[in-house]
Length: 447
Image 1 (cartoon, rainbow, N blue to C red):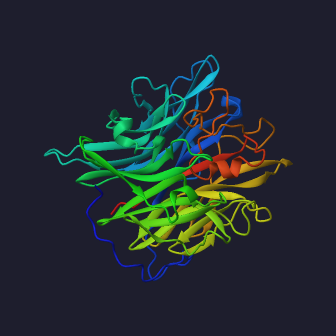
Image 2 (spheres, one colour):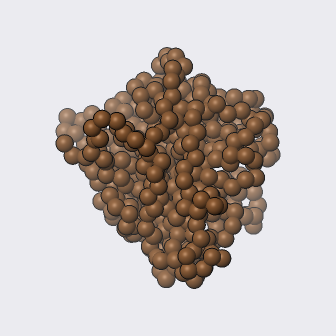
């Protein structure tokens, strides 16, 4: 069963992110972001995992042996441990020219392979949390969520670098045949995680939002659905569920796609879709949340929005409660981008993501410019290579998963989490000079 908490009253007020601070401005936090950037001289059109930690200069992270292709990968999740980064993500290897994703963690900026279950050939690590355990001598435990499998993903958890939960009969609800963990949180009593699972045989493909609850050792578990605002046959979850714990309340955010297939952002308080960001299915804007944080009882979410039509370009966005604010893009005349994650510290709301801009050396080329927006003000982040001639970014963008039953000769069709696919999948983007800020943390200053 879910955590036994009572539903709170509806939010009394919402706060719009503002650029000004009141009174004595507090010392700003250290901002850390993780993602990937391209270095065509090293890996061609394949990305490399990077951290931006306290500055705008990217630091590449080590990878596992790439096999018979150039090693590549990405950071997908990030937390701070004693002001130091702990990242998780993907390292890509090839055998006979066929790429596979391998789940990895980067403790202390060294690469650690996360084991696969028997029979699985690839996997992804998408979310991470760490916490001191209840032992007499406090031990820091690390919890990672993602997916493993062969051609289709199955929800998977690791604890302290060891497989902790991967049994599909325990993790997948009846009438669902695939899925992945997209967020994870830990308290002193339990592990809570959220994700999406595929409804068996659905056409077009439809997904359910799910929350898993475990004890700290993963010996006991249960799950529950996040209820859809409409009937299951009429709506589907988008590819990502963000989840945070605030006191005894579980908050979740995800995109819900109606019969027309256009996504709308929804926030759940415990098991109830209590806040809709003030948006209705039948009217613009169309949008998808990709990250979630809380300011007291107000949910703040990052994401992307199409303000006027379902076919318009995605733009980076933040919601404060039900209030939408579109974030500035690198090219104001053609604003295409996405917020990927959000972190809150005191009076600051920090969104990581990317937006497109023209290559200054060639207007015909487009660049993915990684950035952090601090209370709406954009700071562009550096990339591993300077803009210039070279290959265009090619897919798949870490998505070598297929829906169960899909022929092996078909292209991957499992939806890619976050806004990256929306931004990079619609037009050619140059690898040289491009990057993606997939996740962000705000580390409080030392006392």
